[in-house]
Length: 433
Image (cartoon, rainbow, N blue to C red; front, side, top):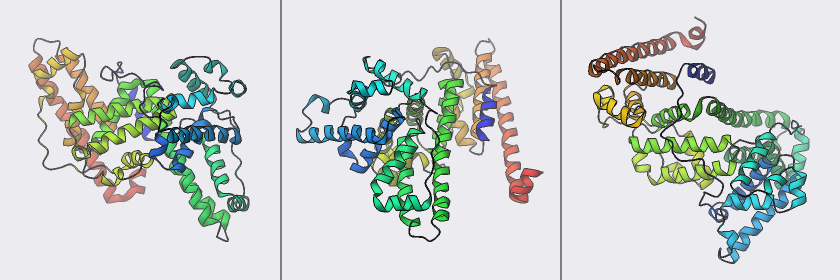
């Protein structure tokens, strides 16, 4: 429901091209991550990552074919360990290693329709494979779940094979899902079978627990698809504004520079995800989690438990962390947003200083929703656009500041009144009054 409201609201907002996200989308050869990644995480995690990436890229391949590709990746890693990473393929960006393996066998690349892609040079080869991946979404038939007895018997016979099949099946049907989400779902499936296969009512046990895991994963995947929809239809600027609000709410005590950096990186991560670049997303998230943990003392006092986790789990832990409480020691916002200096910034940069305005708004009015924050931001932008062109800009800005204050107070009063009503009469009567 929130996203329906969000999309409706955005129709009323101006959507200029984003000016303060200068960094281009990363190509597959831009990352510093190499095959050394396999030495920085567990063998099981690396094996799962490789299987997910190949299954998402070519969803119509068989599991046996993907196992062969995965074995080739592991062989490269072992070779690099043995020769102390001295051969050329050991220093290649990991994305190039994966593409080289996909294109190594001409018969294989022809069979799955990427031969034309493999004839190109990077970054065109990479873009072509991603385009092929996105076009293949929906080409896999719905999964037919085995009965509980069948699943438990197979699990008893060969646990690793069952888990590989599960990861393969969910990955090929969710081409843009984060690797970590699919890997976590399979780990949960492992625990479900380990527990439920000992029960008399296996069906009831498996279905109940699996439904919870599926719903949790589906919520994350659906949210990402909604983000891609909004990125495609409303552009990076609006997505950036929304992500800045979310990050400022989560890390409310961090300074403006850090919040701006994180928000820009998050937008690039979503951009990679929406292009189907699962590996780029994974590596970008790893980079960002390293940045957050490196600056954790300046960001939040509640990051230690996340930063102690491994590379794969760390980013998801940070994303799902509860919002920090506002520190009473933070200085009061400067109030410069409606002064003549705001016009000077507007003239010099061709845009408003939206981050400063949003951070002050979020810290002084934490009760407002993200949608209201966006609306108030765009009203502020309209005020500057109108006032900064006028000779009496100071008076115009003063009037705009008062109008903004009254509007924020009106919205804040409505929110507080609704919250009080909710507490007094309860959810049922609140929704049906």
